[in-house]
Figure 1: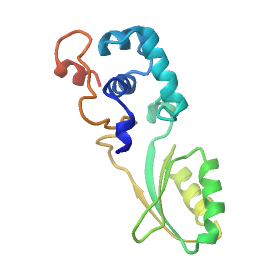
Figure 2 (figure 1 turned 90 degrees about the vertical axis):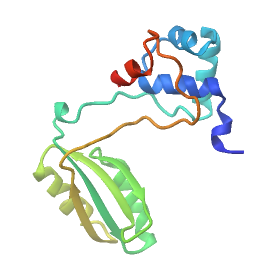
Figure 3 (figure 1 turned 60 degrees about the vertical axis):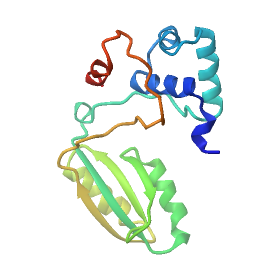
Figure 4 (figure 1 turned 45 degrees about the horizontal axis):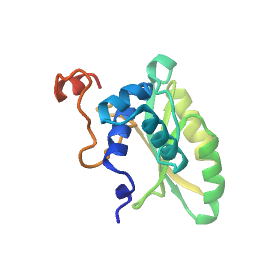
Length: 175
């Protein structure tokens, strides 16, 4: 059984709608997926309990909050004994958006957002490179972002009909 089999079609449709608009009223979700508002409320509660819905967050515009630079930092950690300190630091830094252990030349790929080049320099040279066990870093500065989203694919049939009946084109234009 695949992990997505734990979600039925109604769950997938609801999650699709919530990814598009987390503030959508449950009555509207119910109308679009063909359930009662009480059923939608109960399903959302269960999805939260099971950890399918991990959090409800606000997505900010980087530049409007002063983070003009996005960068990816490849980090080579020379020995696993240094990983714990590294992970603790990554979790404590607000500039770090994502931290992934990867296969390949480097140990980790870290996505950061900072206000300017000086802040990036301080983060990489003063904080990351100074950690015990960090042997090498390589920084890639993003010139332009073609796509950045928190939405994820949910499998077959996850898209319910648009609210206004105008078809899928209208729904895509509002994303």
